[in-house]
Image (cartoon, rainbow, N blue to C red; front, side, top):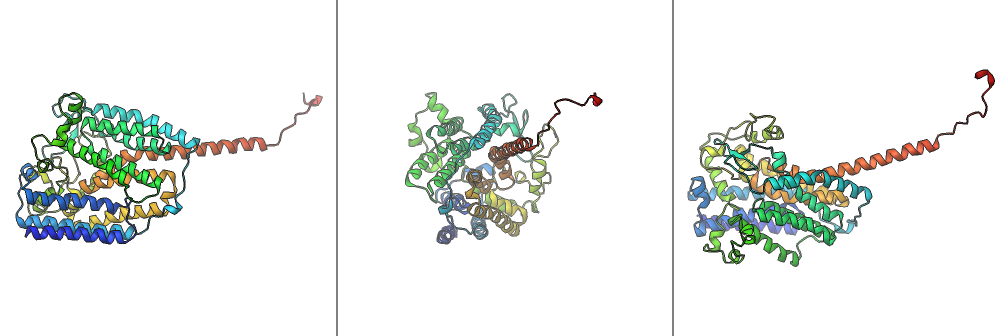
Length: 466
């Protein structure tokens, strides 16, 4: 039964990919491209590995082992989610990329001054946050960045700082991409980006930032070269990046150990004592396993759905816990807590799982359709107007890679990641408009003064007025 379902899973994703590619709208700039990659990794390849090689690390962690029918149910739900997303995103984003109308951008002095001010304002905070997190989060109450885990939900909470400071390091990505964009791909402009990626690799955490940063850079390069898909040399560069992502997933301190001389770089290739299949057994692409757990827990164990109440966290999350010590952890209304039915600490629901938790089949389809419409409409806006604007190109190329995290995490994480990733670009736009408005007002004032008629004073006042 499982083997038949896995074959059907492959056929579904292949059919969606063929229809998408034949539509003429497909490109690396399309959100559906990223969802197809995500779906193939976590809902096609992962279940094959789980079933074919008996990978059970996620089951052991959660304390849950699915039956054959539950395994097939998870495959079915993921395929329905793919179809719902593909139809809505494809419909809303039905526009063909047209690089023939793409202009050659240039940045004037105002653009450069505004961006320089943006870097001077935000880079110190991003650097401070990066240094603060260099040893990772500490749960013993002694580190620079202290956290504690909520026993009811399994979610980590900052103790001695706020997320606005602890997560500000994420601004390094759009700032370094912006330097490359404003400098028009000058070779020296890549140095800050290389330093950012190298530092993240050295620390070992935040591997998704490495992937999304490189994808954002690739999109900017594709726009600059007027191409829709990877070039072969870009694929050649991407393979080592994926290998680095995989290596850090198995050993977060690998780069530091190599630099310190405690680890041989060849161990990453040889895999040490573990086989390649064993190295794939981590939780990086285990969203299928998590989805199977969710389908078992909701509503059979929970007795209810969330009915989209998890999105109420949008109204409570922006308030720093230092100002609101009793702020709810997670959503303010909790009708379903997955941690009650197994160990779900630090695990992600995926967009499909989040939709199922909301209202079963209805919640799944509504969630996937709404997100598909949002991202599809964004894609259409980009190719109708956005690609003609130098700020919008950077904005879009920095945001679209974040959709991978939205697909993986579900819930409101896209808002939190998007805030730090897009804040530098938005501030740059605001500062540019403010400087231009100030310059125009100064020109109008000086123009008005020069046009004012001169007042002639009498050479000699009449004696009667003295």
